[in-house]
Length: 603
Image (cartoon, rainbow, N blue to C red; front, side, top):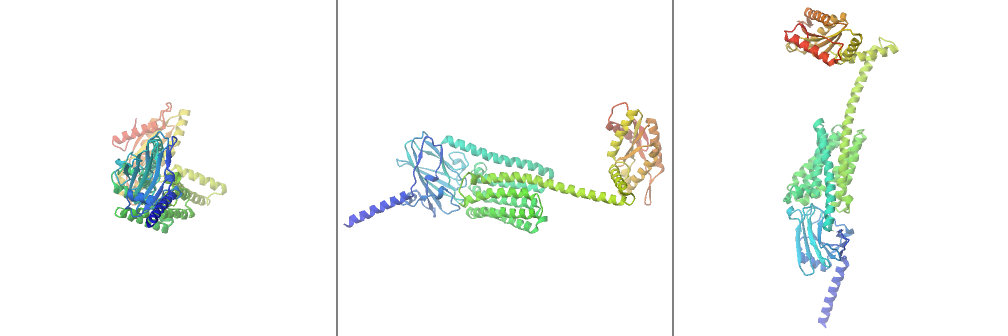
């Protein structure tokens, strides 16, 4: 009787265990002829092995004992967790012609993944992956861990997947037919390439601007682009694929290091762009404290365990970007208009980055928008920041122009005030306009016409000479050894000499109706309308002698001055340009210098 009772109790226990297992069992995945790819979450149960010590046999025992449960909401994201996770499902090939499938774990940062495939004949096939194993051990060279799985037609395969990682526990498993995987990977690589192409184009464009303008804002923008590009390069698994395929240490530590670099770049760029040091000193000090924190965290990331640093760095993203938004709003309210675009850019970036970080902490489900939101948000942010930099530079330029314009307006007002004492009403305004016009045509030191006005006036005189067929000549005048005067007595004395000689030349040439101008430095030029070469040479000789007779007086100094003069009579019948006439006069001047100076020469 006791024997039958014990058998009955054992039978009931087995039935209860089976009922418990079936309560959480999921329908096997049926691969049909139309199946190209499928997410495995709806067909998967899981168990959290908090100690991480269970082997395959222990996991199967827990499965038989009802220890596995459905994935909540079919969202296989569990945040940062200790131990290991076991996942179970069955795959049955009903009528698909494909017998070779690719199982991918579409999260690049898992440390180790073990796949156990049990076939009806009892055979168990084991494969391993993850970024703690060399990249070249993967079945396909792809940024996400992947495994070839044989599922012949009419066969059911029992799968156990063990995942253990110090990173966020995200296990989005997906099964692909080979053709479907090729198509999907092509599209994914294209999207990633497009994203990094945008970053590269923005990098090169702003690098050229930085090299041209030397604005520190452009440098920190480049730093921000580079550091954040490295973050996504790491998170997408591309760093492990291309840069450190055999380094598990870098695979782990580049995540917090790149995050710290990116956040340092963000804060420093915000400081420079928003001009916090001038506009909000308290906000600037807080930003510097945040930068110091991430510098220390980046150093600590090389020594502390990955599990300790990454959640801290990931969580720090929110207050860091949040503080940038606070800075932007404060500066915007204080009237800094470029902050508008900056605010929009950082809002989009915060939205995308926030969604990505929320996945890591299992706060949002993983889908296309949340998974690639950081790429979308950061691409838009980088574009808007580039535009904002240009807008900021234009605003600074406009501000400088405004200052210059106000200074000019103030000068005009002062001139009007002074001339109003001498003129009446409308006459005063006309005189002020005339004085301003004359001021723009005269040299500030000698009060002679400047080079620009001379060219314009000479073109007019040359045109009249051609129409009337009257001669016109040019005098190119250079004060001899003027550099010696500057070197011996100083530039202030040199300025006195320039004013003195210009007065002498003006007096000597005034009776001849000459157009006299300062050509540059100690060079002067004069146009003599109505004079041929002989007449102009005589006037030039008269001018040379006048300069010799009238030395310059500066204080107690009496300084003799001489000049070399080149004379050229313009051929009014030829259609030569003003430039060619000036060039011939200049050659005549050089001939006078070459022949001992203090003389007049013609060509």
